[in-house]
Length: 126
Image 1: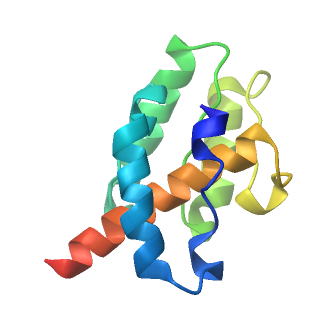
Image 2 (image 1 turned 90 degrees about the vertical axis):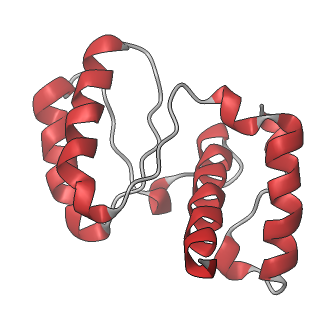
């Protein structure tokens, strides 16, 4: 998947945001980027309990995996505590700012960030 997502970048650093979103949507569809993820759900912040329960169930089912989840900074500590209780030995929780630029995890987080921005802009246009 990594060669297919090399053009992804941070949305807020871009000068031509609309052109980026338009072109990256085509890449996502053409390369079927979403098919590389086991699950892909975008939910509002008001569904945080549902999201936390779903993550706990996912951790129980899958031993070796990487979970990318975007949560509000105010919920980060609660989420980290919940993951430590559910599976603290095998799971590492990192903030996006702790990811090392150029790594597979960093590139994949850019995909998540882009998908969230596409969804946010889609809802704004309604």
